[in-house]
Amino acid sequence: MDNLSTIPKKKGKLTLLSIKVDDEKCHFEEKGNEVFFTCTEKPNRLELKVRFEGEVRNGFLDAFVKYTNDLFTYIPDSNTYLSDFGFTNCYRLTILEGKKFDTGILQTIDKPLELSFDIVLLTESNTLIAAGIVDGQMKQIYKNCSVPKDFVVDFIDVRLYEDPSFKPSFKRRIVDQITLTPRRDSKKDRQS
Image (cartoon, rainbow, N blue to C red; front, side, top):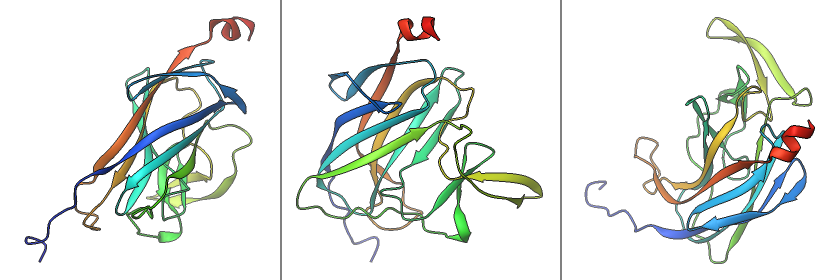
């Protein structure tokens, strides 16, 4: 049946509605699917609000974060990700409580859907969920930690993915994405 069934065409558009940097609304400029915004070199929290219009099967938001040192991480969104998750080693994603779900929860949508997506740095205020032995090593799991403390973000791709055949082995496809590029605020950097 899998060989005979057809995968539906991609249908959908992701739009950035607002950006908050450390709880303050931030001005941004759009050029196609690229967004430029001003922030300090190391913000503590980015809050993004996006709108999705269209149809999606088994979809979820995630972010690909590229750093100035050429490393990168992926960040799932708690609003659209089915499993609870935490972060070990300050930034490695771990699905909590042995849950094995590998899909999101967004399905065909009749009207536009607004979602929030938070990207936070590891700070003293992050909640430590658990500490224990994982793979023979002591690990700490945090609830809200997306970006390692000493890393500087180069750009962020916020993407809406879907797994249309509802199989974890199927290669997921991007329905739409927005690239966010920070412009460093030199005034704030000089003051700090």
